[in-house]
Image (cartoon, rainbow, N blue to C red; front, side, top):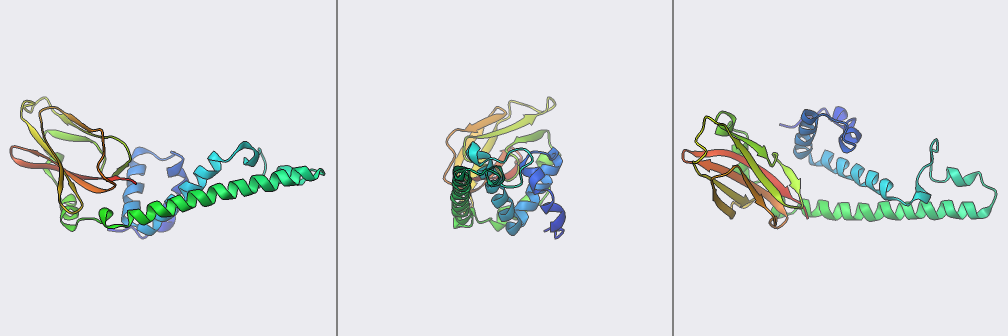
Length: 220
């Protein structure tokens, strides 16, 4: 269910991007993002702008107390300071435009067919699965986690359970096609080479059936 109180979430965008939110606030923020595509676009654009400013050369950085890139140079009588200010502003603008172009290219891909949610899996995600009451607790990946690198699947098996029992880990693409299937006896499995960019669902099963269903996103 979507939360229509957008204003409160917009006030938290910078805190989220700068790492100022608590763990439970981060999870709530990300859940809201994935349920509100338009808001997610705002967050991504803001992230790109912040990153562009961070990566801008020192000439374009704002000095303490400055309100704009031009301020340090506008008070100088020597024309070369004006040119330095203009050059710095152009460089910063070019960086922002380049970052923005990459951002929209990624967003275009994220709206493609490989990222569309599978209604069958999404319906199961909303149900109370046995991992919430069983002796197996999921550690990672977090629900809806985004990645471009290796993916670590980890869970904890409580001492009361039989650790020798094997578990089955299955990974499906958003079309329901199985991409990875492993039978495991441990508590961790690492996919060093992530699959093609897209939305994926993963299941953990024991001898009694489905224990957990999660999803993760492989970014372009």
